[in-house]
Length: 246
Ligand SMILES: Cc1ncc(COP(=O)(O)O)c(C=O)c1O
Image 1 (cartoon, rainbow, N blue to C red):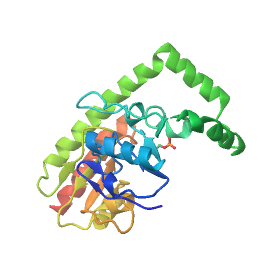
Image 2: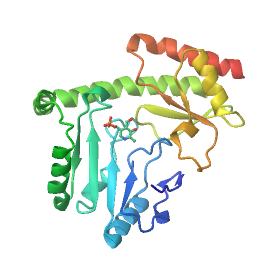
Image 3: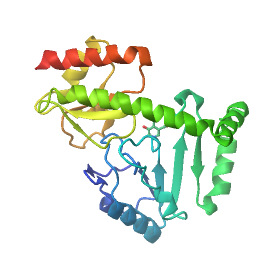
């Protein structure tokens, strides 16, 4: 596996060469939280069309955009070059292990064969239940509800972090279930270790970045995990960690 850099316009796709495929998170880059800009999207598709490569569009949290309507999928721009992957891991629960692929027609049989022979059958009951949720409209309602909950959580987190600006700066769009908080001049691992001593599991950006890629010191803070009743206390702990640093 080779890697490409990421800047404020998303993955730097002109760094692609003769690879057979590229995995992108266009709606919300992991971990930096930026959107892949339209020119880069077109460039990746041109590259794939020209070399016969596949673009894997990993839309792992595209339901959760808080500032505007979600950007359309790359898959619709080039259905023959792009494999689209979605999941219920963010909208329902990662433990369900359910997701979906939209494949170029030429790949469908091969992927079905591999899935069939991989032995990892998805639960029929879970799939039928999800189908019922989708058809009845309950899945849409769940996403709307969850979007509101996570948006409020993000707002509260960002508001708290803003009190520590400029020692702490948030980057990335208002979306998804994590925030990247930059800590200029700090050792991110030390801050993550201090957070762990306060009972918080947050990671440094380095734990989410391929070795060898330079990155600024930052924490990746997921805000979806605590149950509602524990979120205020989790925020207060993070506040205490940052206060101890300042
Ligand atoms: C980049 C990325 N892709 C996909 C997923 C979802 O994976 P799965 O559907 O296997 O739970 C995640 C979950 O955190 C993710 O961060």
